[in-house]
Amino acid sequence: MCAGYIKIHDSGPPARLTCQLATASIPGFKNPWTQKHSMTADKKLGEPMNAVDAARTALIVTKGATVGESMIVFCDPEKRELGKMFADAGIGLGLWTRLVILEAGEEARKKLDERTKEVLTSSKPDLMVNVFRSRDEETTYRIQFMRIERRRTDRIIHCPGITMDMFTEGAAALTEEGYEEMFAFGNRLRDALKGTHKVHVTCPRGSDFTLDLGGKEFQVEQGTNIPTGEINVMPPIGDSFQGKLVSTSGGTGKLYTETPAEIYSKDGLAGEVKCKSGHVRDRILVELNRDPGARYLGEFAIGINPRARIVDAFIEAEKVVGTIHVAFGGSYRPSKTHLDLLIENPTVTAYRSDGEGFTVMERGRIMV
Image (cartoon, rainbow, N blue to C red; front, side):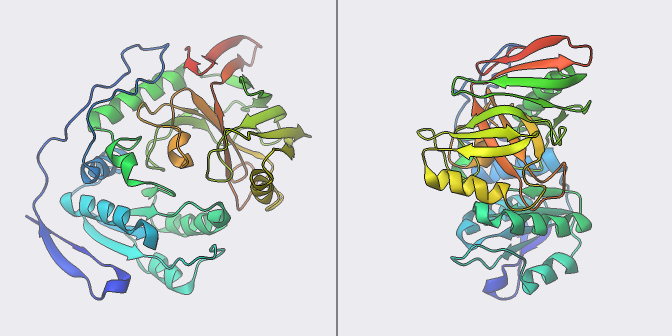
């Protein structure tokens, strides 16, 4: 038996619990990485998972959670059920677990309140988990939150906009074997892209742009976000964006497949934005105009999660096999924003320093 506790700030003193360490194996599924190189996602990936099991697996695989460690789960009120899911997963692993329900009203939060700052700075847990609602107007708030967290621990799971079905059927419904297969595939793709200095991206929607990586190598993301499942360069050369990017997701937290947004380069940065939807255009411009660093490239990434789906929640959509995403802000130059933009069915050509080019993806199919 192991001891643990949950504390919910708006529910009085903590309740001390005991729990038996979970030893049963989690039901698996057949992973699609049957071909080492050219492949697309197979959506027939086994039976739905138990959400707490999936959260527990994520804690083990991505953060190495072990018996006796401490964890704080920060949770927005509307995400209480998901916060409790992570807390239950932590207790099942023998973690000393605290669940903190944050203050969140109708208005978007722009800065941290004093109570939240006190909780963040008064504790030094081994792990921190953020279960936030997904509101683009709160990007600055979330960035401030994580800056303080990083002073307390480097083992952080950040989950803005997650839903329960992600952990039962979607991108977070992975067994340990599933994570291992996905990371192994990501490592092979990363190795195939070594030495890439420049990429050229086109897509059926009309994207046609280039950007420079500046000699930086791709990394396999392994759990800053849950769901996880991408390889990325953060950042590429921030003022190297040339051409037109057409996106159907990101920037507003919703899909806008009927009204794709077009972002045109200007002097290597994000420039003019065109979109039939005034709301989508305005939301993107709010982020691009947030500060001087917001129009610089901040990320280039390729999705590798076989269970990820194109859904409103960008934290899952950006992990879909056969997609890429580009972000502006938050990395190359200091910025309070990080604007992700999804490109579906891309063709990506990579170029090494000697000018040699090779096809990485062709209409969404990974070819290396």
